[in-house]
Structures are given as structure tokens and as C-alpha cells.
Length: 324
Image (cartoon, rainbow, N blue to C red; front, side, top):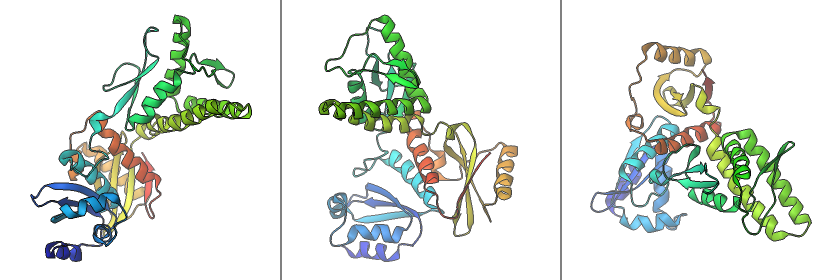
């Protein structure tokens, strides 16, 4: 470790923020965030770093920049924006959002019932950040077609070899797939049907079949979360009030995205509603933070929504969420 790095490490603040690791050429090779910059950045330069990535990356680090933020949520959103803009070599997550895929339900009985597509099409759902679960689901579901409606759920049989469907079966199957992909309740009912089928197969000692159901349950659980997690969240405006050193930071959320921020002395409903009403009257949403000025594609929005939704779900101490 050079003297320059030692000086930077000693001067890091105990505050939330984003850090950028630079190589000898001045190029940013990694971007990270933390609730405490001092603690996090110093952890890369211990004798035995916890992460393999840190061990590989540290020899290349010649300089470190950092940006102090008001809150950890600010840091998470800013990190995401910078990764998408700069695309550092050692970052993996959030960098390649254009590789995210949509789950497309087929329209022609001579075509696959489900497939992955790179672009939004009719009867498509997503985007999906994890391509693997989508690909496995598309393949595994072929062994269950045709799906049927049963009282309180759905019926299917496991076929070692995929069955061909005629037009009528294909259309009924298609309606069910649209329902499962587009509705949280339907997806949950389908998962329960898969669980019953797995237990039945295991009880009859059909262990390979039970394992297939088990894997489908895991992948559909992921897909359900990706496709439907924000269903209610996206329909309402909200304000999230998070504590910081000078009071409270207000995050105005619309369509699952932070579109404006403000500051206040408390997180009472009265104070938050006053802030929201002021924004509504002015009808002006200037980007007060760097991450708010980044143009976002449909695929790019997925990561920002996941950050906002996940952060709010962590029940940050002293924070409050108000639906408007």
C-alpha cells in the first residue's frame, strides 16, 4: 500500500457515500457504496480481504475518490447511476441492464408457448434481471403443458418428453400463462400446485420428477418476485422520510422511482404531506441529485426500482413511508 492510499484511508469520513477505485492510468475500475465510507473502504486493504474480488482488485488501485451523501439510499442510487454511466471493469451488477430479458407468451400454436425476448413485445412481462431462471422456466414448463384450470388452482402432468398441443389446448394454455405471469395471486396459486405435485411425486418415489418440480418452484418464486413484486408499489405516489445528520431527507417516489428529494426537520405525516403538497402545487421536479438526472431506459429502471423497494422494505430505523 502506497503513502497516497494510506493518507486517503486515514481521511475517509464515517458517513454514507460512494467510493470510486482508480488504477494507475486514472481509470475507475470499481464503484461501491456504504453506510460508512471509512469502515468499508478500509476493509479492502486488510491483510486478508474477505472477498476474492478485493484480493484481485487491490493491486490495481492507485487512487480513490469518494462522494459523501446524505443517506444510505442516496448512496445506493448514486452508485447505480455511476455504474451504468462508467461501467467499471470490476463491477458486475447493474452494469449491463441491456442484457435483461422479457418473458414472452406465445400467440401461435405452432410457436413456443413461452420464450425470452430482448425487447418489449405484446404479451411480454419483465424485464427480468436474472436470465438463468427465465431460461430454465421456459425449458422446464414444456414438460407440463398443457396446463388446465382446476378448482382452486391449476392442473398439469409431468411428461418426460414435451407434448405437442393443438390449437385449442394451446389457447387455453396461453390464457393460463398470461394469468400466472400477470397476477400475483395466480402466480401464488400456481406455486402451491407445484408444491403439491412435488410432494406427491416424492411420496410415490418419483424422485427425479420431484426434483424437477423443486427446481421449477425455485425459478417461479424468483419470477413471481421480479414480475409482480412492485404491483401495488407502482400505482401510488409515496414519500419516504429517512433520518440524516441534519434532520430528515424526503424521497418523492412515483412509478417506483425517486423523482425528487427534499429536506425537513421531522418525519411526521404533517411535515411530509406539506412537502408533497408543495411539490404538487409547483409541478416542477428539478433533479436535485446526480442520480435523478440520468436518462433511464425501461430496463435501466428495473435496478433503481429494486433499490428503492428493497431499501424501504429493510425498515430503516427512524424512517417512515407515507402513501399519498
